[in-house]
Image 1 (tube, rainbow, N blue to C red):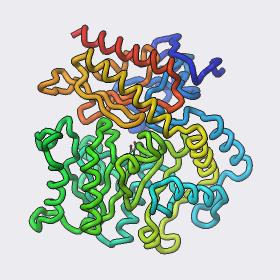
Image 2 (image 1 turned 90 degrees about the vertical axis):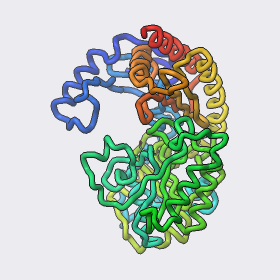
Image 3 (image 1 turned 30 degrees about the vertical axis):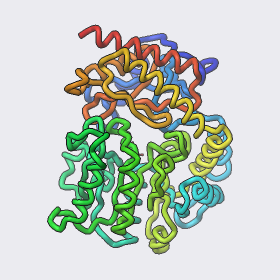
Length: 456
Ligand SMILES: Cc1ncc(COP(=O)(O)O)c(C=O)c1O
């Protein structure tokens, strides 16, 4: 039974989190599902979600949470957005599947046209696939088909998914170790994580050192780097802690690529569809990538992703050279169309900019109060709060971060723990979150930080 007002409710806990029903479901998962698919084997019992609406999640024990994550930036337009659900239900009753490359469908044709309209000027042709990692692989294949070079440059701290090809450019050792050597030729360059500068410089005086370093890698004949087809990056690094690079870096990167005829691939899987207070992070940084990858927020929860590129690049593909059974699935494309319409009609891009700025103010206030908050960063409605044991040494407060996330969950607020050292509170609330929900959720955050830091 859906709780009355689910969507705009404040946190309401009936049991501990996870409660007895969550634990029961976990037992079944533990028995029949591979440990690869959850943290259960690591001893972390998850809460089992049952219903989602607006900014609320209700679990199987009847506990109601305010979700400050939009479920990994997917449900910006709210969980189970009614317009998207309606479009899915309607399309499912008409045509559930059409044969990927053989028999396209009408919503697919409508969607690729719409994507060309909303993405930065010049990105006009799309390939639709199913997941983020699949789209990442497809973007890299596209670059190779276009310029026939072999190597992809990525960034330290970058996350691009965990299928084999995507893993090649994902940086985290923890995910890569069991699969090395990973076939695809790639190089990882330092990313401008200015709070923890890889070159130990100050952001205000470094003069774009990361870009200079990159130029040296590309131009120095003895750098060990050659045959670069594309540079792929998250314009704002999500997995490693909502790291926002300086605009000058991104602009310079655009120039670096253009000058050397290297394709710039923007992985906007997290940053797309209003999350940054612009349609895309590319708009925020004022660049047009050669290829853009989107997923997550594109359909409010339906698994679908897209690779969008400039005409001459996308046209390098031969007929049906890339296929997938569910490519351009009619239900997924209908969901995307409804989600995009919602973002437009409800002006969620502006909402994200405004609400994001308000939330950032709250976070800066908390930073004044709590010495454990080393850095507050983010754009639009993606905010990262990096916790440190000491503001001078910046030693990551990883254990405290985990405790705060757990304590917040027990009080009905969902935030994610992330960052290179697991010391970043990652927040990306749904655009539909209400002022009352914001107020209470951030009071709970304040309270949890106080409790965890006093305990020490
Ligand atoms: C920036 C980025 N790229 C790629 C991916 C992989 O997407 P998926 O999990 O849908 O394969 C993710 C997922 O979190 C992501 O954040």
